[in-house]
Structure formats: C-alpha cells, structure tokens
Amino acid sequence: QVQLVESGGGLVQAGGSLRISCEYSGRGFGATAMGWFRQAPGKEREFVAFINWSGGSTDYANAVKGRFTSSRDNAKNTAYLQMNSLKPEDTAKYYCAAKQTLGGRPTWASRPDAYSYWGQGTQVTVSS
Image 1 (cartoon, rainbow, N blue to C red):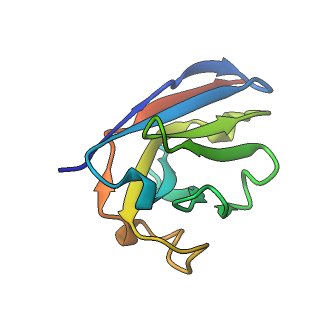
Image 2 (image 1 turned 90 degrees about the vertical axis):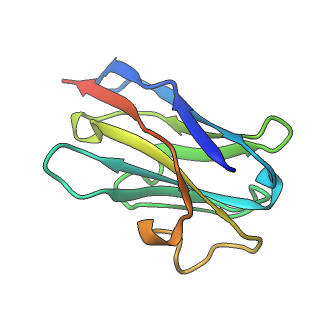
C-alpha cells in the first residue's frame, strides 16, 4: 500500500522561500510520477507541478513557473517542491500525488483524477 506524507509547510513572508517534501512509503517510487497540487479555501484544487519517475521531465503551472522547482531523490523515496519568491496568492494547502507510471511528461499531468495516491496536505501561508 502506498502512503504519501507531506511536510515542510509553514508561515513565510512574501518574497521568502519554503521547501516542502513528500515522503513515499511502499514499493515502486522509482517508477512513479509525482504531482503537486494546491487548494485555497473556497477554491478548486489546482495543478502546481509535475515530475516524472526519473526527474528528467517536469512541468509547471504558469502561475509558479520560474519560482517553483520540483525535484526528487529516488534513493530517499522523497519528492520536493522548492518554492521561491512566494506571494500571498500562493497561500494554500499543498498536496503531493502519485501515479505509478514510466514515461516523460504526459498530457494528464495536470489532472487530479489521473493520480492514484494522495497525501494529507501541508499548509503554506504567505503573509504580505
């Protein structure tokens, strides 16, 4: 059974940085694509970032492109989202999601319903 646990969220001032982590337990992390999503109160869950099984292919929402970086360490079964130049509008609960698949950057990367496993989320709050 796959379980995902996010950590590293918190309160940060606008312009600051945070790195959130997603620890994967279970088999097959090295053959698993990871997605990052966020959800603010009263809003729908939205795509943030994607990284394929090897880390060789990534994708980002336009709102975070150039500020956020997705990475992974397959030896540690962990995915990361480095968030720089944070803005108040980045405030949300951030979720990691997993889909056991190989390949590059798929067309489904930004669709929440494409992922099989989800973490419980970690809150990121950016003050102005």
